[in-house]
Amino acid sequence: MRRILALVMAGAMLTISVGPTAAITKNYQKDFEHPFVGLIGFYDSDWNWVHRCTGELLSPTVVLTAGHCTDDGMGGVNAHARIWFQQDAGVNYDPATEQDPVTGYPTACTGTGGDQLGILCATSGEMYNYGFNYFAGFPNTHDVGIVILDQPIFMPEYASLAPPQVLDDLIKARGTQDTAFGVSGYGISFSAKRGAYAISFRERLMATEKLVNLVSANNDGYNIQLNGNGDNRGGTCSGDSGGPVFWPADTNQVVAVTSWGMANAGCRGDGWYYRTDRRAVIDWINSVAGTSF
Image (cartoon, rainbow, N blue to C red; front, side, top):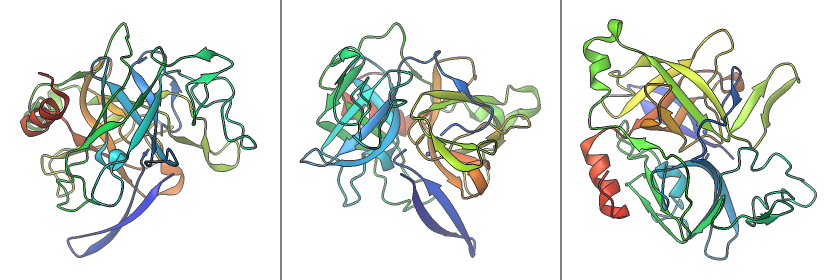
């Protein structure tokens, strides 16, 4: 599900990987703490599968994700989307039938678990792109997308957008600030024990990452660079794109969405996340979603 991009910066060729989806690796745990984070599939006008990502509810009908997730690759946005909020949304996926019989992923909201349309699953025919254009304008890639659901999904809690420039305090006094971030998503995971490069569990996983940089040429106020925390390097990979980055880590406050990462063995390197704690981004979200976050 991952796109491989070549990006030229400062005369050096860097290979970066993004995904209409980029998954939690290594020191992950099953995420039952963020029920508003969902596995989102995108489709063309005929409901043909395009790719999958992660998205998070800001309200019963507004889903925040990455711009490269809503992007159709032709200057527009995908025609349709479907999102599942079960923690194990695609765990029982059967390659033979190309469907999870319990949840209906990736083609329906109905399975042996019953009809979940408007309960833990929703469709969409309305989505927006902040201006993502295959990483043009790097580092300001405009990698934010919004999906408006056809059916409201009511949750006990939702993700909340951080106020403008809340992360700037980390630049001013990093040594005295909390630099742990939380990430959540449905992407693939690296498993050395299984002798596999990557495994797609298709379930919601969470991990903690540590701040690496906010002000380098790759960031410049638009992105944040994080790395896995601890010996097992929990971080994101293909399938987590659009997923939330929480700061502080134990809150529902979203400061960025998963955007891209340096290509490396098992997706265990640094990840870059497009900041949503910017006035321009928040204003754009409100303008397309009709909200006042």
